[in-house]
Amino acid sequence: MTNFLWAFGHGVALVDLLLVTPQPKCQGLKTTQRTHSLSGAVHEIGPYTEWVFELFESEDDYAALLAPVNLDSNLFVDLTIYTRNQRLSSTFVRYNARAILPEIGPDGGLDVFPRGLTILHKKLIAI
Image (cartoon, rainbow, N blue to C red; front, side, top):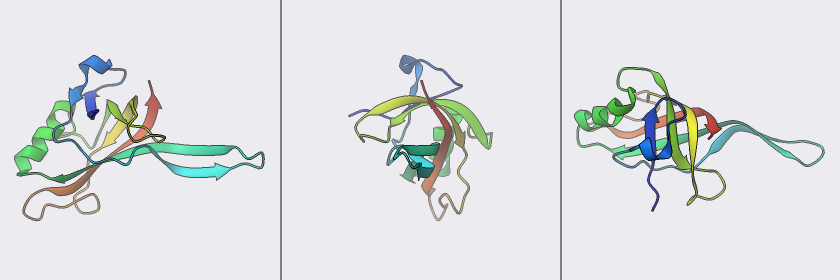
């Protein structure tokens, strides 16, 4: 099984990426828009991916997830991520990305424990 990895900054080598703990759920690469031209070609615009974290034992565990990539103190950061691509769920690809800090409410909640939080990665560029 391939694991999700990440590191602060763009262009980080695969061997230098950090294991994401806990591992998120991810449906792979998505696009904000998909159009079809008259020639039959498909054009995908705005690639992004979402990492969903179901449940944390405490707010400290949530903070520990975000700290290694400086997302605990910023609304967004530029990262290198290793995540599923859009074609095959078992195929992973390294991307330069911008990670967006989850917004409590729309991107998950804090009932008793942080749950269902989604980290959005956009501006994806395969490397």
